[in-house]
Length: 198
Image (cartoon, rainbow, N blue to C red):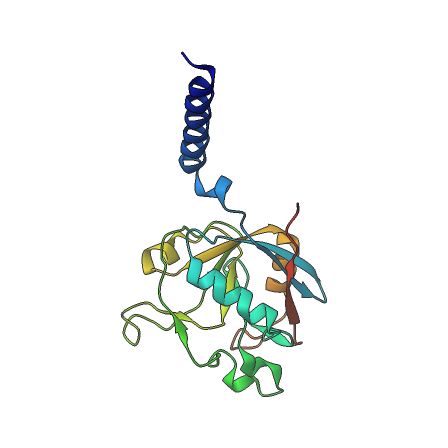
């Protein structure tokens, strides 16, 4: 066989094999999940965001973080053994009565795929009677303090996971709260993105 032809065939085979191997890899290998940090006075909560499972939710969360939409929001709903919830712009003022009813003025289509593990980051939403499509709030999110299979059955979009700082989540969940489950003392936070490691 001509050496030039052999080299061409070998190169083509190697290219095809490499391309096939790349596409055979799982999404977690091909796609780097972005990471974000929620900074509070109780410490930092570091999140991994699942772009392949909930791309619209992750894109929206990243957009709001870059716009500093979340800066000054509070965790306005805390329930030990259940969730801490935040991301409502109404929570930035001193009026607690409307906390939980605000957002950026739009919803995000449901991407219900992942289970509520301990530390799951998920989107809040209105109930099925008012929201049969189960569309998510445009900005409000919660973090699961424990595994919550009941929320899997009810259908909420999980779009990330706490990878560091569950102790911070539990500290916030255990704070004194009023009859509306709002912390007696405000727990404000800001969200920033972590640079990708090269």
